[in-house]
Length: 490
Image 1: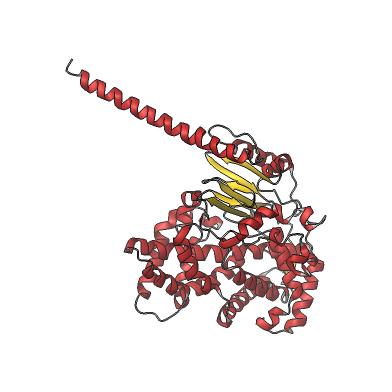
Image 2: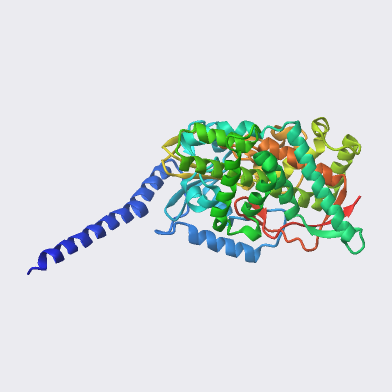
């Protein structure tokens, strides 16, 4: 009898925990999801029926496997290559529908009017999804890419002005482009006949972009910064980059500590250091602010440019008539001189080529937002907690917006700019949309223009028989097997 009270209390505790777990599961897996779905259904938004626990994940995985086994590699028809389910659901439910990944709710929107509403939305009630910090937290941290609210506003205010391209920045870009040219010339000299060489361009493009951003972020410490960049970027050798998190954290802080109180250099690191001091947070949060924003700058500015350059070279190699046309313009404009602002402004054909590259393979392929509060986008009420996905390749290749050749590489469509190329200028979003537009988009455009101009003036490009076309969505839309080209010195 003496053990009865203990046994009774234990039983009550078990029952209480069981009840609490049941309520939590009921709320998480049924009541909250059903409430969101009901509010969207009342507005005429439908979607595929979800699995109770996994949502639509099984259906998405099955479609990806089936698509890979059935489809032949082609540069055309890539709009849904990463997510074939999206194509099926668009046909069935229209270009705005809802689906679920586990317990997370998503609103898929490739309606230009919805994109316009997001572009014009300025409230902080629409931010980045929480899953980015959860799934990519070690890689992205709590920097400008993932944060929301006043913290994001503070970071944006600090960093955006630093990505302006002045004469010194252009010189850095040209120097990095010259390094690529010299590297390829050495490869040709060491080839069997010295006439051509089959190369994978990935590492060269990443070296070009990472050298630039390392110099911009770390200034005279860029050599140490390059070590950070080399360890951090998500290359095949660094797929488990999160395992290097502590090492990268220490490397960045070591550079920052050496800089504190002793530098008059106004590079991006110095601005981040000053921003961390003005944020009013403690030492731990200040360190996090410094490290995470340095990581975000290295990743976004470097990887985005590198991957866009890979796609650009692939498309030029695949379209020799446009390659010849762009090369002719570069030679006529530059006359053997290195690019400068005046010369870059005269390269109209090359600009059209780059706009078309970014249309077909946008660096920010998946634009994601989260309703941090109930928000109204046009006529649509988006419940708090719902994630919004815009799959840019589908928007960029919609024949109703871009014409019957929407899947083809045709830079001529941009002869009168974006407004002349598409029925809705809101349907062109290679760098994201709205308040969260990539702050380094102008820097990226100039890097691409300089690099492609320098390569075209020095080399002829053709597709290697080793090239395997397979766009895949990692952090960005990248060539899964890299880009193999055959280069010839002109």
